[in-house]
Length: 163
Image (cartoon, rainbow, N blue to C red):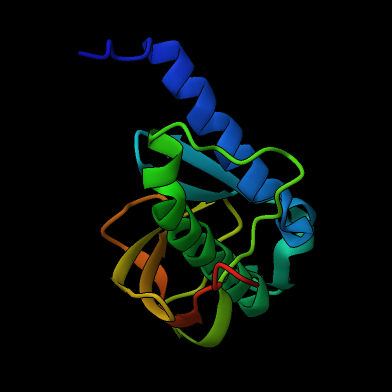
C-alpha cells in the first residue's frame, strides 16, 4: 500500500498549480485580483483600489470591473475543477506545458446593488461541466456573504486536448 504524501508536499503542489493558473491571465494582475485557496475551494478577492471606482459621486465600483471580477473568478473555478484530479494524482504539468483556459460563450451579470469602495469577494460554482461546454454561477459580496452586490451566470467552451 502506498503511503500518503506529507501534507506540506500536497499543499505546495496545489499552491504551485494555482499560481501557474493565475499567472496565465495578465488581467488578473492588472485589476489586483487574488485567488485564495482553502482545500479545493477558491475565493476571488478584489482588494479595493481608487482606480476601480466608476462613479466617484456615489462612490461605486465600476460595472465593468465587477463583471470582469466575476468572470475571472468563474474561469479560475472552472479551470481549477477540471485540473483537480490530475493535480491530485501528481500529474502537474511542467512550466513548458501551456494551460489552455475555457473560452467565454456568454456571461450575464445581475447587478444587485452598488459595489462599495471596499474589498470584494466572489465564489463560483460549476453547475455543469462536460467535454465541450460548461455552465458556472458566481456570486460577489463585500461585508456580508448573504448580501450579494452582484451575481452572474456564464457558459464556456471547454479547451480540447489537441488545442
